[in-house]
Length: 524
Image 1 (cartoon, helix red, strand yellow):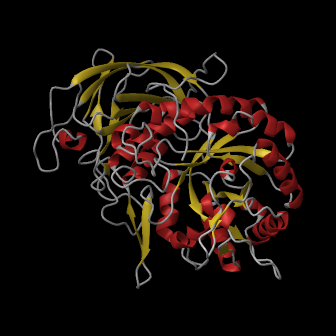
Image 2 (cartoon, helix red, strand yellow; image 1 turned 90 degrees about the horizontal axis):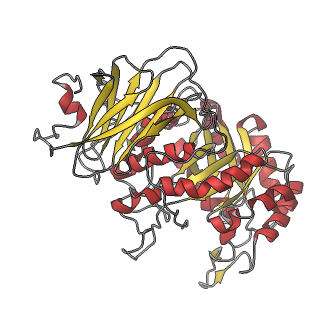
Image 3 (tube, helix red, strand yellow; image 1 turned 90 degrees about the vertical axis):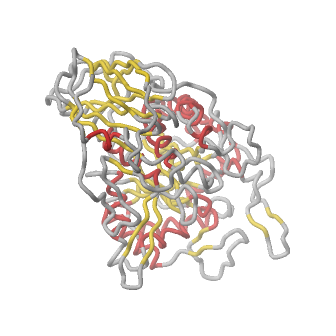
C-alpha cells in the first residue's frame, strides 16, 4: 500500500486529462534494489547533443553577442551544473570545408565555413562552458582541406572549447553510399567498394599528421563490421586517437518493410532490441576501448535513421525509449552519448524560431522530456545499483549519489495497463518523493508533463513552467509501492546520508538490467 495524497492521483496519471479514469486492474511487479553499486560513476557531460554544421546557426542565430538564450537554457537542462559535450558533424562533416583561396571545392562539398560561423560557435561554447567534438572532412580525400579546417577551428574557436576532432563521418559507408550527385544526375562515390578498415587507418594517420596537434576521435562508423577491428585501429595510431566514437540508430527510418524488426514503429522502438539489445551490441567495443585506456562515446544516436519517422520519433514513446536507452548505455560502460538533431527532422529534440521582435522561442518535443528525467535520475558522480526485476514492459533502474540520495526510475512501456511496482530498497526507510513523466498516450506529440510541469506549446525561457508536483511515498513493512500508469515513467527520490555507497566487487562491464537482451539491429 502506498501513502499517496488524494490530489496526487491526477498527477500520477490515474485520471486522464478529460477526467475519465484510466484502465485499472493493475498487476503488481516486484523488484528489489541492493546497496551494491555497479559500473563506473556518472561522468559530467555524459548526455549531449549533436548538430549539423549547416544547421547550427538556425539554433544559435548569427549574432555572437546574443546567442539564442532558449537554446542555451535547454542545453543546460540536459547537463545541469556541467560542461556539456556538443558534437558538430553528421552528414555535413564531409560536405563542409574552410574555403581555400585558389582551390575549387570537390563536388561533394556544399557548405563553406565563415568567420561568423566560428564566432557564433565559440560564443555558444563560452555561454555553456562546453566542449566541442568537431567533425573533420575526410571524404574529400584531401589532407589540405582537413588541415585548413583544423587551423580555422583552433584559431577561431580556441583549444579550450575543443575536446576532439572527429575524422570523417561513417567512413564504412564511403564505398556504399554515393557522396554526391552532379548536375547531370550522375552519382559519385568518394571511395571504391573495397575501401575498408586498413584504408581508413592509413588515411587517419595522414590526417593526423596534417591537422593541428589536437586530440582525435574516430572511427565514427555506422555499423559493427568495422568495429570488430577496433583494436587494430587503436594499435595503429595509439598516440593520435584519444576518443573512440560510434554511431547507432535502432530503427531504419527509410525502411519500407513493416515485417522487419528495424521498421520504424512504436512497438519496435520500445522492443528490448532497441534499448538493452542496442547497448549489449556495444559492450564488446566498449571493452576494447577500455582495455587501451580510451573512452567510448556514441557521438550520434537517435530513434531512427533517415532523420527519424513521423508518428514514431516525434511521439511520447521516444521519450520512454530515450530514458531507458540512456540507462542501458551507462550500464555497459559507454562514457557519453550525443543525440543527433537538425531542423525539420522527426527526431528533433526541440524546434526553435526567432520572432520579428527578436524573441527566441522553442517547441520542446517529447523525447527531450525523457532525457531531462534521465539527467535528474543519474547526476554526475552517481552510480548504478544492482536491481532484480522481472522482464516485461516495466523497466527498473536505480542510482545512488555521492550524498547517498537514492533515485529509482520506473518506466512502464505498456500502452494499455498500469503496473504497480513493489520495491524493496536496501538501506532505505524514509519517505520518498515521486515525480511522474506522462502524456495522453504513447503516440502523443504534445501534452507531455514532468512532475506536472511542461514547456507548453512554446517556451521563451527554455525552462519548465507551472508548479512542480511530487507525491510522497512512504514504505509499509519495508516496501515502497508505486503505481506506474500505462505509458509513463516515474522517479522516486529518497534522501540519504553523505556516506558513499559500497562499490561492487565484480570487475568488467556490468550486464544491462531493466530489460531483455537481443541482437542490436544494424544502423541505417
